[in-house]
Amino acid sequence: MILNRRIKLGGNIYYIKYECSYKYENNLNILYLNNHDPYDGGNLSILINEVEKRYDKNLIKDKYKMDIPFLFDVLYIYEYIPFIKGVGDISINKSDNSINELSYISKEELDSIIKDNNILIENNSKFDLCEQTSWNIFRFNNEGEI
Image 1 (tube, rainbow, N blue to C red):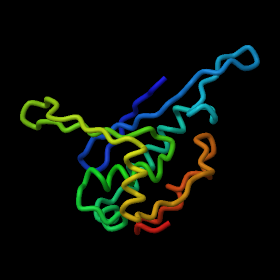
Image 2 (tube, rainbow, N blue to C red; image 1 turned 120 degrees about the horizontal axis):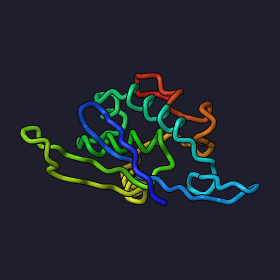
Image 3 (cartoon, helix red, strand yellow; image 1 turned 90 degrees about the vertical axis):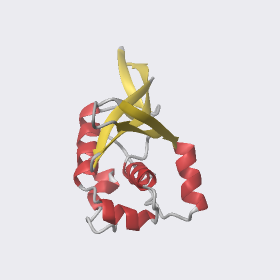
């Protein structure tokens, strides 16, 4: 199943798209994230809160060397929430609170942008949603350095 979760960076509202599936083990249905880590919605909420709290537009813009706010924001999200399938953006009309535009960028497109622009992203291959010590966001020092 595909799930979406809201994340707010500055004044922008994004949603992350990720995949979960049920596996039947020991007479129980257990929800797994991307087919390998048990899914924990509480830990995801903590992770998103940390990503939102540590966000600094100027540091992120300098780190990723992008002039397009959507791109440096989604690269930031992707670096610290590495299991996503993509990131969407919801643009709201302030006068009547209607949706102006929905944008979406996939993990594959992000990987291509990272490669084509030689952007340094911290490797997070040992990421485990259930193990907070594996989260790179806790190594982010609010100066754009890990």
